[in-house]
Image (cartoon, rainbow, N blue to C red; front, top):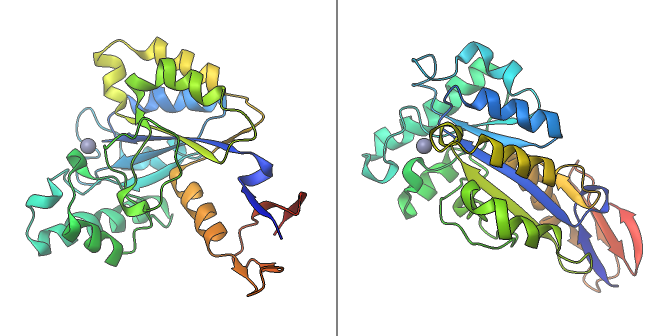
Length: 256
Ligand SMILES: [Zn+2]
């Protein structure tokens, strides 16, 4: 049996965005994403929300209705510098507060200052996080193996030119690809790059072969795909998750 995995609706490319810190500039960014039907994840510091220049807890559910809300630590502390008790609190309390404000179950995270080590990774895993994003850009569109050390494709400043061309021009017959762009919305204001971001979003939107997804939806889909059960002789496959998995089996499109 030949088996080839696809993204939902038999797409073979995925695009996701990840924005940190929850400053007020997220509002303008969400408006751009919504206009172009793009999906993103916003990593927030629950202990800093409601301060001047930052989003309010009250607006989260409405503002991020079509997007994922994820953790970034209660107070944006250096994770590797914290004693164990404080490290646990920094992320567990962040989950609790964001879940209480939104009524959602929150399982995503990004490392403040991109800082992490073995202890931090293991702590997040224990606290139930499904993934955590680093700032170690790969410069490519590879599918991540370890979601708790999720390496993005690039920062948005590096996404607008050659990376965008390369992603859109990847031929259909190549393997699954993921374009993962990260940054901070305040950078668009500080560096006067709102127009460049808007042009990028316009260019990326509406592509028939691209799955527009949040970080957590991507993780959940890939975990469902990786959890497929195959019979020992490789002729049968079963999906025990509630997420439909799209594949081509012996050349035939199948939704498992
Ligand atoms: Zn940050």
